[in-house]
Image (cartoon, rainbow, N blue to C red; front, top):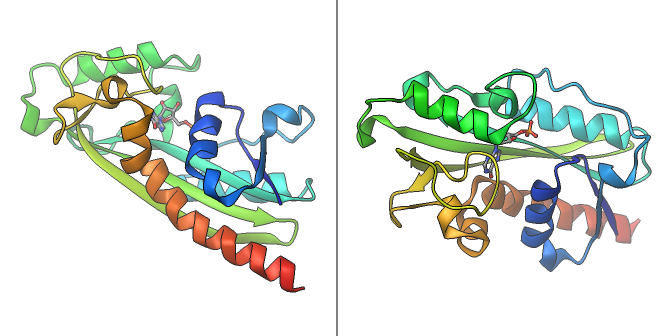
Length: 202
Ligand code: IMP
């Protein structure tokens, strides 16, 4: 079965492919469909944005579509950057500028005041509409400096206390067993499996 991931973010797509590899789906992304509709991410929650991406894309594609929306929530910043994670430092999306802004805003705060979590919402839809939306979270701390070059986005700052290292240092093998994306996709996998069984039976 085909699964279209409603994203153009290559790193996210690779993570999703890695985590869902057991399902043996033919996975592609919007990078393969340049004429797919551009979706404005104006929802107030990750779930709202994920559902919008999945439903709007599925309406014009004859396939099962996965919409994903994710971001970072920092306790000391009242949950910011939240749904604005990609463009926290301004319109031009820059991981480096976003990370530097986070470090600036948390300057002087000791580790216990640097609690944060990632959130990932995953929605599934087909041409008949929304099938389901699930969410996964991953808890950590914001490091005092960027460390490591694995992953993307805020990973060089996202410290996993049990390891004393950032996702940027830990690499994919560990990240993909505990990340917000892994947790959301584990739930989504069950929805996909049921969907496949239903399609086969009809
Ligand atoms: P989206 O494409 O609007 O969902 O943007 C999500 C943004 O949240 C990304 O650009 C990153 O800044 C951040 N983000 C989401 N997931 C991760 C992750 O796994 N690692 C690091 N940053 C992430």
